[in-house]
Length: 338
Length: 236
Image (cartoon, rainbow over all chains, first blue to last red; front, side, top):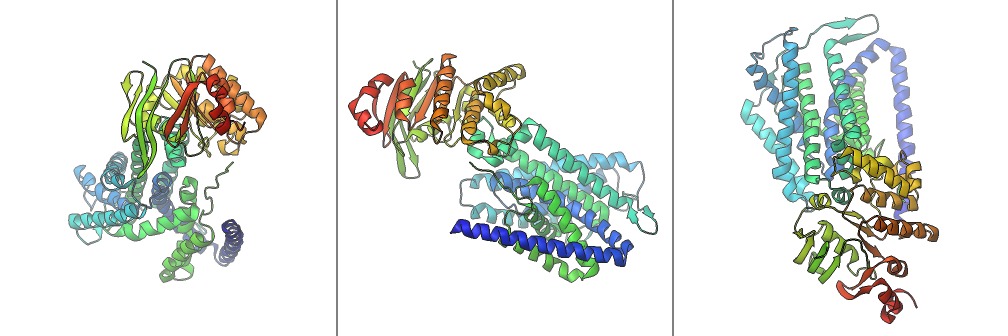
């Protein structure tokens, strides 16, 4: 009976997804015919936003993959990346009023590395004190703890810098390339290049290195991984580190793009990125990247052509539709079993 | 002193006691079989040895060292490796990656390469499938891979949990032939099996577990010829 229902939901889900997908593609084609320039501009926004969502969604999906925890604090870890960057910039003599100059580029790269490192270490600590003691507990316990951790992080950032939009140094060129069809800025390119670079590095790490493979092994079967001599505490720590490093880079990219950051930014960005992870198939790394990109594009299209006040409604409607009709997401884990 | 010894081990799942004072040993060069019906505590015994569970009472001694409360990962490094019940392969990783995970606790590249070659010699089918995703293998191939993966740790004792479960008779023959071969090469084997007649015929010694208690022990032949064992486990 359950099997029958699963099959039914699967078929219905596929049909529903194909229909919605086709409708969306048709709509985009119409938009392209009406005004290609406007559509391309919207797509640029969608892809840059999507790249940032993808960087956050990767951390959600990796942590879920390895300990089946939806880490609701992850959105705030993203914000933390931007917050950590500010004093680092100051230490290098770059104040919030600084403007783009080539000499800042090496410092910027260094700050990127430091932010990822520090953010990773913070997240390892969070796992250690908040989640690890609850590893044997019912699943609801770490979930509630994660929500509590989200409030702790937000509260800390609030107390640290106050409830205002913090100004961020303007370190990326405002230059744009424009012709009759395309209008794209250096900033847009920066976001996408950083995201692609990090996703490629992640995929090399996960697929080629011993620790990366051990992380996948732990995610697939924790007991069996232990029987291979894999120290699962180490692989879980590594997962939290990498998730936070990516989210931290995302937070820094976000702040550089918009030249501002706020303590509660991660709350909504985190929920949207979570939706992206679910859409792609929670636990699936390629899925998170794809889901992030899709959600970014959908959001930009809705903002531009329907109304910005509808974008959250539509995005969370997608979350519900995916959870009901296709819980494994677009690239969900279909494990062949014998 | 034997290579691996359990002394009076009690183990619990929550409040349910699964093992009652289990005492057994595996010495160098031996194949030791652990037989018994479902729920007799065979797998629990292996989990206790490999450190996935820790006993409430008693001791596990390996190579003269007390490993009763040692972490699972550390125990693998010490030289005990297991092919778990139900194979527990990394289903979404390639066959080769599964084998390399078996060698996770080692860093001697040259020897790992040699052992990989050796596993391929023992199981030519595994070599043919080396770049395939493990989850797509047939049941028999998966079992061979699980055993190969355990051997990649170059263990001082290898524990095999139900290696013949669900396999066609011809494959059962293959698996048991390999078990003998592994043992002839000098690796002691602790074998958990439902197929008692097969297990007893290859084992040097064997223990019969009944509801968490060692009910009988002896050489493989003695148990094969014992009337109680014949009645209860050999269907005679």
